[in-house]
Structure formats: C-alpha cells, structure tokens
Figure: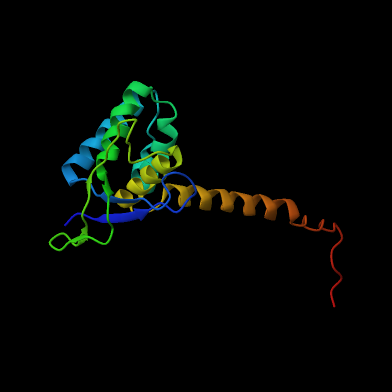
Length: 174
C-alpha cells in the first residue's frame, strides 16, 4: 500500500483549516518523474556529481534544489504539475474510507474562481510535503539543519582561541 499523509493548513490566510491528502506516486511513476527531472537539469547545464547520486535521496534532493533554479520554466512546469497529482482535497476530514484507511478526498479544483488552494504559501507547503512523503525527510528541515550547522561552525571558529605559541626553549630536565 502506498504511503499517504494528511495535511491541515495551520498558517494564516484563506487556506487556514483546509485539509489535503497526499498520496505517494506508484514506483514506476516516481522513477519516471525523477528521470525527467534529472534530464531537464542536464539540459539546463546542471552537472550531476557522482557523489550526489551515491548520497542517496539526500544527494538527489540537494542536487534537485540547486538544479531547479537553473531549469527553464517550460521544463519545470510539467514536473510541478505532475507533483501536484499527489495532492487531493479532503472536504470532510471526519469521513474516512474504511478500505483505504484514509480520509475520503477528491481531485483538486484549480480553476481561478473556485480553486481549493488560494495561497502560494499553501502550494509551497504542499510541494515540500510531497517531497518529504517520497524521500522520507523534509527539504526545509534539511536546509534548516545545514544552515544551523554552518552557523554554529562559523561561531565556533570565530570564538575559538588561537593555540599558544610554542617556545623555542627546551624544558630543563627535572
């Protein structure tokens, strides 16, 4: 059974309180999506270091975060659209499908007049949650942890004492 995640928007705005169901892509679709993303990054000139692929999902994620910035929108748009096929709207979170064990949902309405998602921040949150569902960790948390590690390393370096100068005199035997 594919993994799923239920997200209720807690932030301020028009989407506050709305609930969404995220469903993991089937393995074949996820592999094709990742291949399309890597090929699009290659067309954008992103070099894929071998150690990034050996680092597993984290390496691919970090490569993807860097690569998306270099991609043309025409290459990124279908990937973004396909990512959102993992998201559906939950009209009533109390109604659960007994066979699937998850809330009953329906496809997203994306037309401008009656769209289920009305805030850009909601879209970004849901995209991050979709990535986390597929790779097992949050891109935002990884970046936050990396930033915190760099900050603490910089603080430790700037506040550490320099080692005392070595004396050129030899110690006298006792």
